[in-house]
Image 1 (cartoon, rainbow, N blue to C red):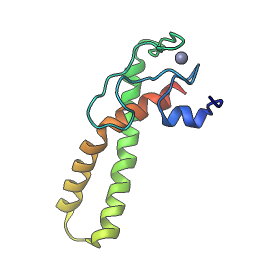
Image 2: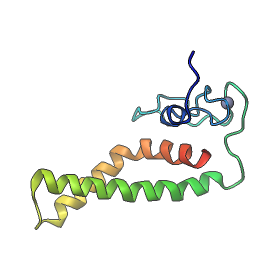
Image 3: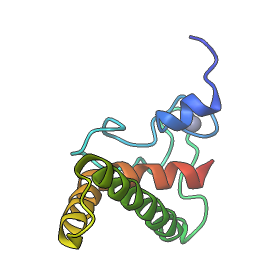
Image 4: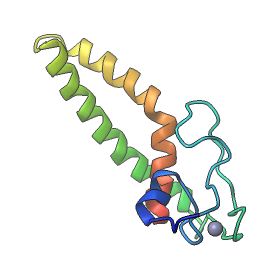
Length: 114
Ligand SMILES: [Zn+2]
């Protein structure tokens, strides 16, 4: 197997130390299962580096949500050209955040570990 790059490991939510073990039990981009492995199945690295790590991940997750919301709002504008209805944007953004929540949940933890 080829040496895995850091970017590849991040995109696939692999362990930051050995880049082989999965950080999550489910598929990375599935929208259903959402459990994090507490330890790397390959090298036994403990993923919760310090107490409050998952609390800090909430802030990263919040920042990602803001970015996602902004992107969704821009896309909505370009697709619909709507500039008068704030409810359209509110609805689309909330829907989008729910849709992307599991992915943001994983991405925030991956980003924090690297
Ligand atoms: Zn590992």
